[in-house]
View 1 (cartoon, rainbow, N blue to C red):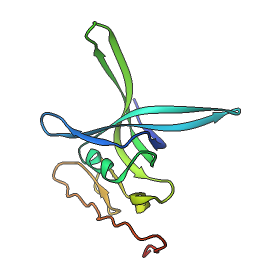
View 2 (cartoon, rainbow, N blue to C red):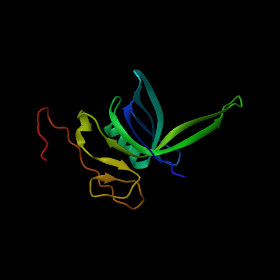
View 3 (cartoon, rainbow, N blue to C red):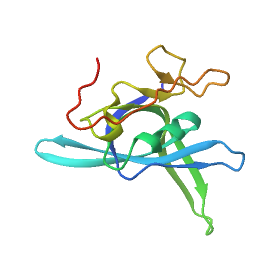
View 4 (tube, rainbow, N blue to C red):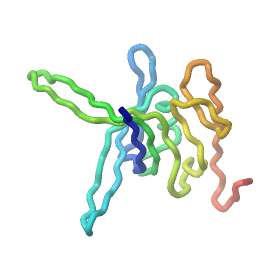
Length: 149
């Protein structure tokens, strides 16, 4: 079965990287977007979780309110609370995140993406073991400066 999602939205809070007890980096964050149907607008929210290189990348370059394109798959988290009640929630297990939207801070970096994919020549980082991390050095340009391309 195919389980693939791609969506665009905004961060509802600054993404914060954490680590598992074994030292694997992860980042939980929420993305929100609006939908309008027949003059009725609704806001949707989706919890997301990124791992390893993607998790380390997000808090460096994204902040609350920044636009992002997320690629991943939907998974169900289930648990039982202290009172024995069962709960479940659907989250996006993130493969890649892309910059999008208006230039602002580090978001003016263009088509840089990071995720769990094969190495590409277009400055793509990956968390596959043994693959070099080709992560560019970002530099914030003074207001009014023109990019050299």
